[in-house]
Length: 350
Image: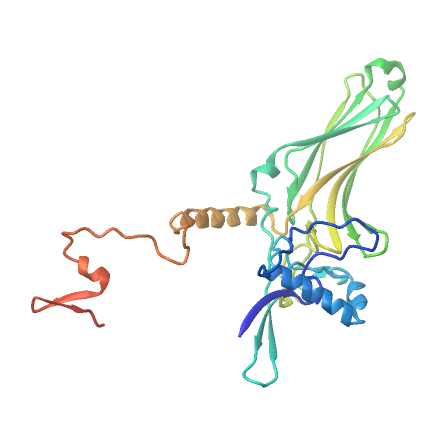
């Protein structure tokens, strides 16, 4: 009996891709040596290439819009888009064979979740800022107090429009019509042999009318909205059962990167102006499958697991920590399962 983890949409994604004819040879970290033992990763690459050369259906598998995960790469969580144009599934496959009988395979879905985008991590709570200039007259600057959001989390943006002091006479003629704040989802499909296809979808939008001349001191405001979330219950108010192998989240998708697709999110601020070009500023953000309250609960569990990991023997995690037994301890023999019976040391039998 043996076990392995794989992606059920990929029979060929076990190693690196082949180098095209005429292209420089790429280094995959493998060095062939005579009479040297082959590693598991090297065997996976060899079997993958043999399957390519002997199977005409290889290109059918490569044309599917699904992720080809490498074995042991846990940075790519299980994911399924609503239309199933992008999907990643992990399975624990058990192969059973006895003697010359036929080999049988049993697959068990394994839902892998992503925890590196929790909004409670310190790196996501540092302010992010950027700016852009229009016609050398107006500068649009934005600042985000944090840049990781989950379902129903409040999104707040600090917006500032500043005139160019060197062109203050022309900058005074600029009128701010309105400011627009949108959250865009961009899915990039990387099909082999084709140009990357980008599909942009607006998840949330808010507009604020201004209708005033640009002051010499600038214009400052705060824009905010709530990150959208999907209703987990159906029309009858019943919580449906999640699909095997896919975690059940309150968002349709989240920030992730795979072999054949990549999902990114942007916070877009657009300033509609007159007597100057409109300014559009896109700031990348991170979308977490869980809201801020859920991230706090997960952080508590992570901290507790980190405290418990201190008591694990780093040399051999399977062994318990060493125990110190003193010579005059009256129960010292119990540690080696020995008892004194009639002044004779005998093995302790439960």
